[in-house]
Length: 441
Image (cartoon, rainbow, N blue to C red; front, side, top):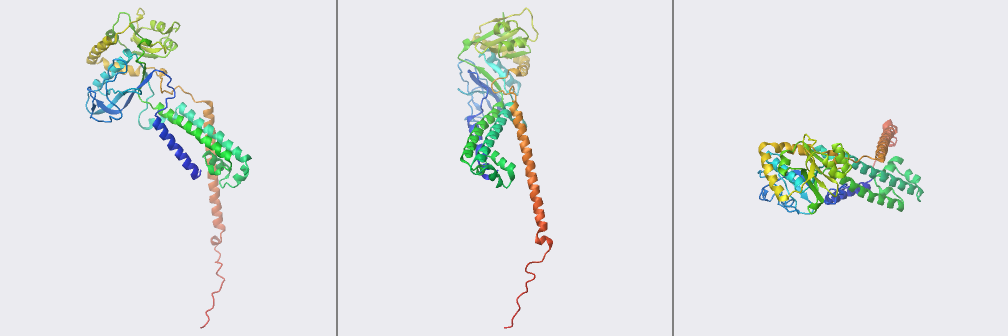
């Protein structure tokens, strides 16, 4: 690869990184028309209950710690612990960002649970887990996920096709490929490698240069998708999807005769998500005919909420079921529910049940229902395997050719060294020339 191609590839790579970093993670799978909020887990300053960041002024340009109104009447809770810790904060792309305290201590965990429960039962939000990556080598893992590998293989495949098309134009061009290869000191294989590296100096025809230009543009687009697929899969946190302006589109239910306090006090081990009637039916092992309501009626739930438009929802159920129990729809009054929640949370905080509840919340989620930025369900295509195999063979052959070429050069130099006059020990050509005689003056 010549210097010209090296500069081109370097500039292209830097440009891609700059564009993708400026645009942010590319959401490859987010099709939900509702607002999408994400609870991120990241090092951050602790937020006081009065809305001030502790210490004051800490990264205030990145995030404000405020009690925001998103069209609903719920509060944003912040930890009162002093100092720094790892925090949860809720990011809303369209409105003020919000922040939630850490769950590293029991006091903070209670606030996290309070917040989660209020989102699920009060604002009727669907909480689903995102793919979580940790620091260190795990950050490189998304590069090898099927979606990213597919895009990377597509980049290689496109370049292989267009590079061979350039070779074809060179072959039928005025100079001819064979004559061009004849002047290539590295041989045909390394000459082909120069095309793989966008070495424009090797291209003799205008059509070939134009095709390589198109190739670079396509690689830039695919490269942006590739980087986007990697950054999207490293999203850290829990996605929360809801439409605060469409409360009538949701149904909140609980067991007949129960109140919100009863629901939380009797909450057992079950927390399940479903994204369709069939998924709900498969989850509880019953026929899904009759819609979500029928599905839930045969499921001994303590509480649930259903997105009537998207046919999805959240089921909260007891650890052991009673066959006589049935689920009926109840209209919750938000102010009353808010008051009930405060009372129940305080009670659960005292007897330690909240710690168990939080653990069940995070551990009981069904990974098969991950939505948003998750790409774990994407499979590698057959042409991805073929492309990777072709690339591997090509690289191996190229390296072997380079090694053979270098070995031949070393052998040639050794042979030249042995056959040179100096190596044979011959006399200097000036040895037989007599010095001029010294004539007397």
